[in-house]
Amino acid sequence: MNQQIKEIKVKDLVLWTENPRDPIISTANDQDVVDRAVNDPQAKWELNKLAKEMGDYYDYSELPIVVYKNGKPIVYDGNRRVVLAKIKLGYVKSDGLTLILPNVPELLPCNVCAEEIALKSIYRKHVQLRNTWQPLERDIFASKYLGEDKSTFLRFDEATGGFITKHPEMNQGFVRKEILTDSILLKMGFVLKGDKLHTCHSDEEVWILLDDIYQKVKNKQITTRINRGNPLLVLDQRTKEIIESNKQKTFHLYNPPVKNDVVSKIVVSVELPQRKTPITRKKRQIFFGEKLILKVGDVNNLYSDILSLYNYVDSNRKAFSSKIYAVFRMSLRLLCETAAADCGYTGKKAIDEYIEKFYPLAKKRLSQDIKTFLHEQNILQETLPQLFHTGAHNYQSSVSSEKAMGISIVLGAMLKESHGKQ
Image (cartoon, rainbow, N blue to C red):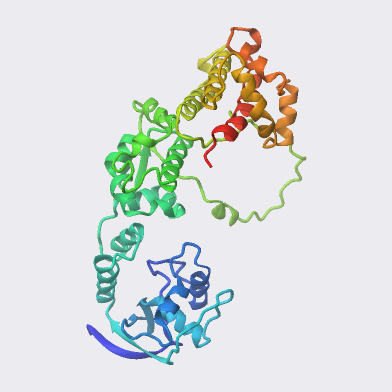
């Protein structure tokens, strides 16, 4: 049998759990698929839109493609239309979804064919003619059903524990063709060997790199028109330094983190011994208090450079003496001077005037814990100007790591007020 048009009861049609649009576990039933389509977290089903397009009646211009497996008619293509039909006729529930549905007959004409023909027809319709699938969906389908070799894009997603799947903004054609390619990955310190990812970076550095790439795509700093073909140029300075410093290191197999949901399914059958209340450990502070998103310019460049230097020192403490924090104190003063000048403050009192304007605003951003920490370090509005000035000299107080941390947090909060991206 090649193909034939056959009328099948809507009640008997089985929704395809492996639908490339949004696959779920093979044991799911029709109601599970409909629940997924109704929730539609990634806007892949758009049932409301389809219902409006169909109007008052069920459109026969595109027939569902059906394959009989184990005596059951599986809907390989046209699942959205069949979902609407099942909802209209009351065979499934659609809680939380308000639809104006077209009239649907109890029997639907379907294109019944062999699985091989169904798969070729689906691929031709969604990839070759209309291009309605996203790149990862296309690659999964071609590999799983058409026997094509897995693309670099797909292998990278699998080897990173679903990095592209978890970040839909990355599932774009230009990302597949111009960013997550073998050549660009190699420049960033990654190489795929079969289905395994090898890297010269630590696990923490891997996720710093991947997050930076994701942020650049998400915030449209890399698009089909901006920085196209040159993704490495727009990466953060810290990311560039990671790539550069690890160039000569040996590549090793990268193992993505174990998913929490896998861990949660492990059942411990024995009674665990009662444990004492754990010690409350002081939360480690982050330089500048948080990652800042600043306006493009000298202030942002200097901030990025100082942060990259601090992170490098923090990761290689044994290579530096305590005097390194005097360097950070001087750098923080330079950053504050640059920000003040950028705001129009000049002369000997520029830093003082900058603090007078932005410290009160910044203070409102700080948590009570941070305020307590700053008070312990005597970092207040009235003491801050002098702390910046003494930081420019080789005073013993300048080598305090906690003092440098506290000043960076206050300065970070002020920079958000004066130079933060709106």
